[in-house]
Length: 568
Image (cartoon, rainbow, N blue to C red):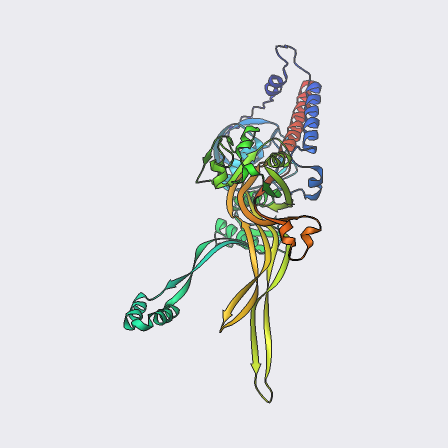
């Protein structure tokens, strides 16, 4: 057996980094240590006051728990050359000259052959464990080596014990009468000319049906975390030979019995899974209604944002264009109200330096009166639907029937069916976070206004007045991609209000019969556009600061080890 170890101290990395200009004098370790501590304090101050999130928001958020395993880095790198070396001898020799000890199970057998250059102790152990399947555990400074046999390990899973379903639907119905039998109608018409009108009416009544043509978008999501977790782990380790997977959602534990190499894969999977599901997105929204000025009756001129230094994605809003794949719309320059962005409306993302929506609102005020309808804010987990609902439910009569009971006396009991109609603002959002900090959003906002409308229907020469609910709905359903901190703007949701303005001469306008001569009634239309702004912000722990602290601790241990060698 031949094992060669060459301990390498990374003096050149610290020296090359901390040289000032052409200065030939190397700084002392104490000076380098002070500079590292100063840099850590500066970064910690920056993290303590993030420019994106206000302080009141951070107080409402629960810091996500990250359980990513942080293995201590080896302080020494060395080369290993082994050819058919007994496993017990290999592990015993591997820890010589290091602060670690080795405890080897008597059933550990086999021969190890490898050739590794400039690796740490942790790297060497991971390679041997992956190649030969030994069960290597580390407790403090003691390495425990077990043979490759079935082993039981329990993992802690931080997730709620629930099953969650979500559904979002946008429907456009267009009912129409469709003739179901043209031949029957033709036959009835030609058989009796004198009764063609009656015959046609009878034929139409018997053969026509209501065709509910239209468009519907329905989005469903179902989350059964514990069931999916158990089935995924079971597929990873397989079945047979005593392998088993047991999940206990109430205690948040996952117990797996498998081979050591398989348990290592399960551990990697569980760590990445929890890192994903525990990521959160802070969703801040502004729902605005803009009463358009006379110069912007065809819609908001988004080209003004381009001239103010805003950008849509990687393009400027001043350049017109529409991406049919992403649905992104950028307005073009031209006469206000006549460019592409105004005609299509749509969705685009505005990235800017401000930390709130005030800059966008100020620009919208130049094109009309801005009314903030709602400013909801909610935090949502990765791939979990968040719903915001602000409004009230109004009940309307949708069905009236009567039940007549005949006996010694006849009694009639009316039955009235009431149906709730929501009036207000609803917004449901589902975020998905990728590894690069991008956010994919499913957005479904809607603004609904309910009013009572009376319909008069003639039945058997009698007029029947029916109070019905009239819904004025403005909604959209789309999927859009944005970066953390970008503002996603949904525009183009316009409606027209017809109102009357009455002016009259005092006293004279109130005279009965003659008051109309001194009264002026003006009818006018008012265009309003609904604008929805949504800013998603990823909330997570700062891994950069923790990495710097770990590096500081590692370099400190290097200097202490080097100082001991110099003293010798």
